[in-house]
Length: 124
Image 1 (tube, rainbow, N blue to C red):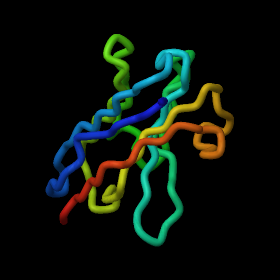
Image 2: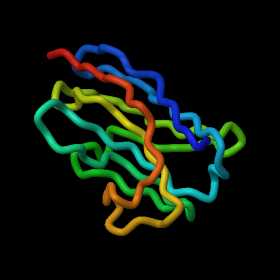
Image 3: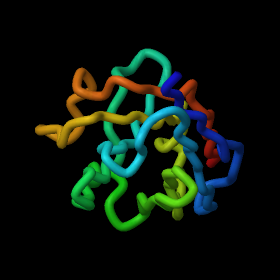
């Protein structure tokens, strides 16, 4: 079965850092576009960062300069390095995979594999 498993969430004070990981199982990882999304209670899920199968990277404006998406194809693992975290970054973070290069980048309907989520809490 095709699966994604996130880890690395936790609680940090404002200004802190976390690195999220997402391991892919059961599919040819490097041929997929991979993305990070997040959701807070009562709000719609939003895109955070995407790395396309051709290596193109896109960030949401709210995280540019603070978050970095990367991947290790040998380990079938996607990462999200999050620095200078702020309380508004508090959310459940999900990784997702699409067999297409998605346009627009955060169009959720095009991502057909989703992880279970990992919670990030940033205190002020």
